[in-house]
Image 1 (tube, one colour):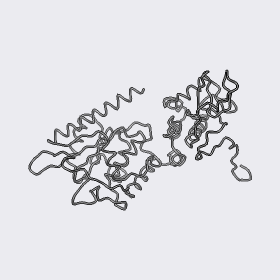
Image 2 (cartoon, helix red, strand yellow):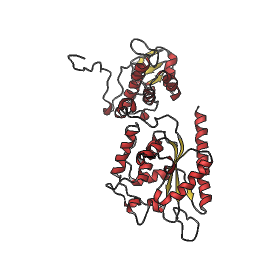
Image 3 (tube, rainbow, N blue to C red):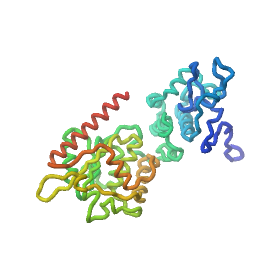
Length: 382
């Protein structure tokens, strides 16, 4: 601070990242992300772009044969995570010199092979829950999964907004039922009864919305705190011939926010973040009069052919609820109705076809199988 003016100094290691230049020749290894560390043939760890000499070959500079790395803001976000870790714990992430370079060879190996378990163990020193969560996001090994500076500023640690659930925390509900209540309430109720009888924790608006709670905030919070979402879709729900507002083919950029579409949009966003572990489309065929048997969803022409337009009100609501939940900005770009439906249907689904009760049992069996597979995968990673 000079004369009440903040001065930024010591930017000689900075590089213009959008001009395809390589990373600079300077930098402190204790604040470098894993992708900037390289192991030489002699077993020495160095920072990409450095001018350090290779042991045993003093005539060759590393920058002449080490693969170069293009600079990116995600590298700065890792460094900021290291700084925040220091501010919260009083210790650097790695033992380092007065020049902020890693001093132990074994720490270089840890950094190069960084895994989330490392920050989880070190994060125990961070007492503030929100700070601990933010540091874990910043110190993610995959550069593309680190939050941007704008997303960091929207994190609950800085914004002060309370969060239903933070990234990495376990879900309260096993299953969330997304459906058009006016037309598919009976099937949703049967699915709820069968899943709960199997011991699963199921979020269903008829049972889980609290008295006096804003219903839209309620179902969004329930979805954020769920592990798997069931996307019920029938002709009357998504391709309704007499109600344009329930017909995806009729939606326009200026259309009113459709709650089913909003739930699916939020589900895709949560899955992108790794919070939602599965999306299971439940495709409900037509029920011809007096037959008692449901037809095939696709063969009976229930699937709509929606336009390639994004509904502004849905995207706006998505951002409102992500901010309210302390999740910052959307990870993905605007989704059109067509791309949204396509992405939901890309997931392995199940049909309500033939006898209703048998179909509902198949839905529940698929959910249980999905949960078992996800749990086995989680244990395999430990």
